[in-house]
Length: 126
Image (cartoon, rainbow, N blue to C red):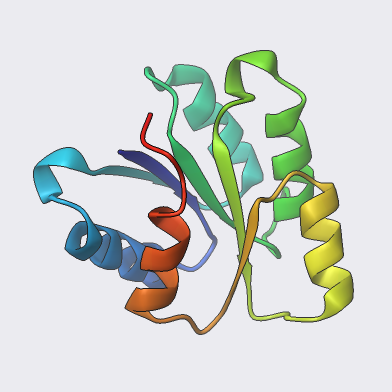
């Protein structure tokens, strides 16, 4: 699995990375990360193969998660990437906006190892 984590908080990137490596065999799980949507788009343009899953924070500087997910969904070559939005904002409005932007799951912060595992293992293998 190739996972792209996009979050402006390095502690969240570290947490997701550590958890993902506990969920999957470390030899079968590669994680790349960016600090905002612009960095996420840059990484998508240079990463081959494309990530299987993107986990993006909602609120970030320069390009927020909603804009980032809409950009990802607008490119045919990235259309099969599974998208997960994560945020401490857990309102119905935020969840609806994430879904409208292409998110398949909404992961509320704080989350547990089991929460992340349930999300990541729900996607069919690629």
